[in-house]
Length: 133
Image (tube, rainbow, N blue to C red; front, side, top):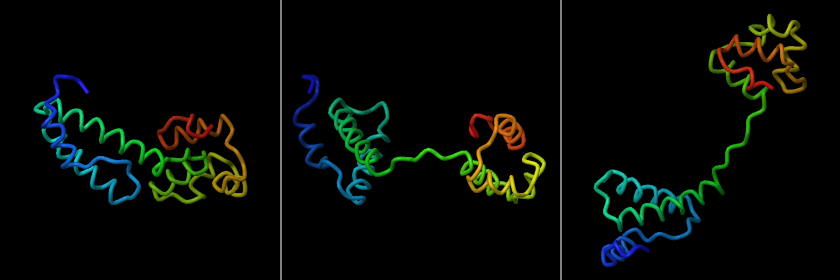
């Protein structure tokens, strides 16, 4: 802790926020609320408040890393989400994949998407073809 931090203020903030390793969703929400209270202060944070904010952010990040990891989506999951978002059916992609059987296999993840198909799907949905490779 830097010597520029007011120790009395820092101790008071620690007593108010009670930072600790987060083990429950309730504790996670409580510390998020504490962070929000500090963030509202913006540039008016004291050194002690900034130190507590940093500590809370580390604790929250640790909990999120353990409990909220996002899994990478497969290319067929991405395709399904794009179709769902636009209200499309399998038949709407027949032009890209050729046959209904082939289209079904791609949509269900039983068949991969070729580079040329990825390019066509990317153009169709106005997204990067890299999403499907």
